[in-house]
Length: 139
Image 1 (cartoon, rainbow, N blue to C red):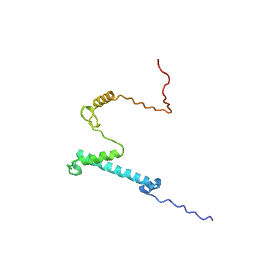
Image 2: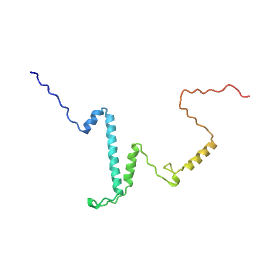
Image 3: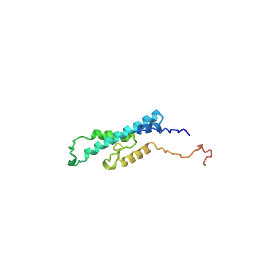
Image 4: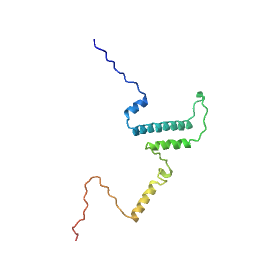
């Protein structure tokens, strides 16, 4: 008779065990943990902001909270900024959050700067480029 070979069943791992298995480097593990913490703060602050602006039905029995959402909004936008999302406020005359300068103001500033110090910027997308003086003189 053949001796039966018992197969070791792998232990079931939780979500943290699965992440640890996939991400071996400790710095990568900290980066993943950091992302989850930021996502948690984002969801929390977004939920608090939502509750500040909606009225819950009386059937839930939760009393209406009077709170100033300024701090929560700053936390929300700060966490969004860590993910690369930036918010812009619409100001007067259609200007966005560029320090209060409208498009027309910016165009006037560029025009004045070009008159006082005329210069031209050339961007070359392909290389190699050789720049050399022209030896032929025009008569």
